[in-house]
Image (cartoon, rainbow, N blue to C red):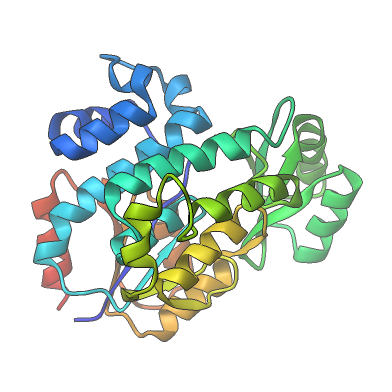
Length: 314
């Protein structure tokens, strides 16, 4: 069986994900989260707003994904392709062996801090569906925004400051967009506004990084366990160094998720599994009408249910 895995990004995390992680996390993962998000990890019931905060969301989502991956990996075939949407590319690279899980939690916390430091005031992302690329580009320029993600021929995400996002939301609706949604992300990810975050994150992934060198050096020089397709352009990374270089660039570089999914499809998977939170990537894959079955981990009540479904497709 040829399995493809998609790791989701931010925006769909819920208290239930936090609760499941608190109940099942291995001691070393719990210790890493206690160090990265101490106030949230010690809280009995963090609010949805707290879980949406960038500094909490990034290490938490990464930990949720890798916690589930550790349960699934021994019982599933080795993937032929793995990709991650935005933050999800961190989990994709970790799953492929680019760096250990505990280092990944700390790196995600650093990634969030660098991104938050780039923008003063309210900012974020706006999904616009139902308009063609030319109309979206014109809309973005008019509102002082940038196209951050291309999910399909008429599905885009714009990034920028809050005032521009609010203006774009009204204009897109007036232009006939089928759907306009402000995403649950507080930074203009994948736009040049975060260039300083990319520049700051790259050294943390380098062999000479003071804090992470002992953890990253043995991994960075090796080959990945399976190819990780970059959300920037769908290019496959087969070494840890290539995968980590893309992780730094994608923070401030527009993503072409549509091209990435096309590259995954070229690997001829028999089944696709999204490791959430949420099921947005599964829906996007389904919209391609490829005939390849897809489900999201959040569709199931247990890891055993996911394993049964995947293996039944083989």
